[in-house]
Length: 154
Image: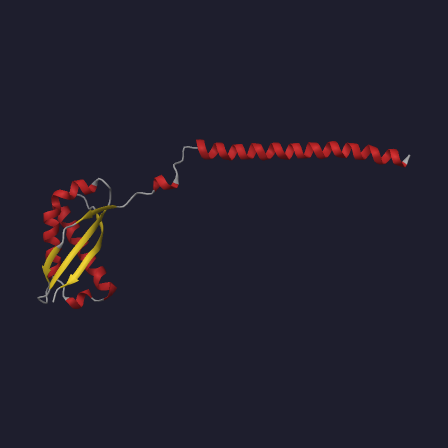
């Protein structure tokens, strides 16, 4: 009789193991399908699409006489707020050139030494350019000024 008692639980145990595996498999498939459906149909844009691309306006080379009498060759790129701003600001390039040249006349070689000197020079250019745009009735669009070339002449 003991043999008959052990067979009965063994056969029902196999059935419950099979049901447990089936339930776990169905839950995994339903969860996986739900995650896939949420990511594809939620309507949220990808992180790559949210990031704006930086817009740059290249300025021509400018030669200016510094406050100490030395000459400096400057080539800068202007980082703009939006892509479309480059086309709208192109007519202002001659004025930007004159403003950058004027900003160069207010500095000396000693002012340019070190990282802080270049940051200050860049900041002064940005303030000057955005001030000009404000007087022209154009909203502020220059975010940063990046030096492409800065060469002091003897």
